[in-house]
Image (cartoon, rainbow, N blue to C red):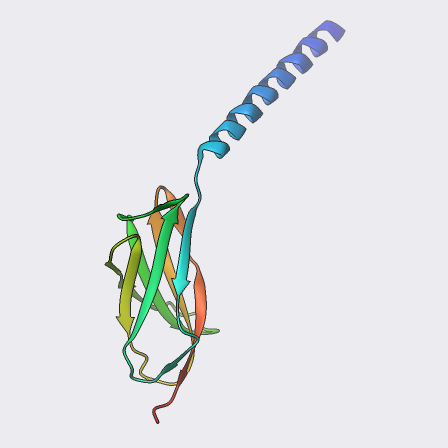
Length: 131
């Protein structure tokens, strides 16, 4: 009985060590998808504003992401926001022009899918009334 337990314990430890080394190798080979969201902190109501996302994978600019969508929604709201597909520019930059029709605080979130990774950074924007 002791021999069977010893064999099982050795087999279990051997299996664990080979799985761990395989996972570490895979993680070291994977670059990270990063998105820098350029959003003003304050905008005027009914004014067209350019929103920009710079997408990189490791040290390289992502020139062809699977999807880049901007979402605009009221802050502290459980409702889904308005989703708009971004325009592809040069050097991994994706842009959109958008205007807010009423005052308030909003969340601008960009949804980026590239290299089998999904990144969703967000920033708040305060919309102030027209002068």
